[in-house]
Length: 98
Image (cartoon, rainbow, N blue to C red; front, side, top):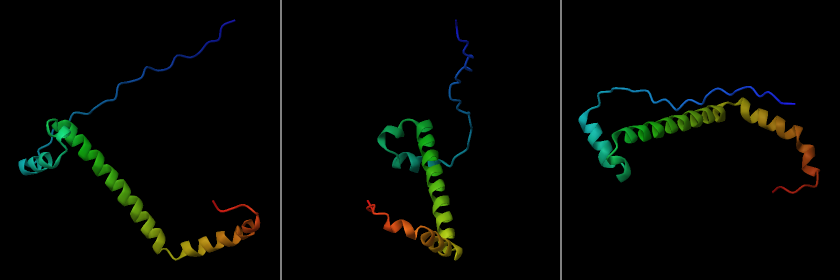
């Protein structure tokens, strides 16, 4: 008896879209001067790392902004107090708080 296993689709190599951008020379020179030594000789890698760092900062800022909006919402402390009341009985369960 043989078991038939469906064929998996081939794995594609990661695609890197080609882009052409015009950057001000002073910006490129400043970025290269501030870059770690291992990135100074590879402009493509420098731009990739810079974009990754930019995206991470924007994501973190969006999260911080969302938390700030939540903290400013008067309904949040009320909901937290309600949840705390709902689970108050669990305080006497004998378990430690570690």
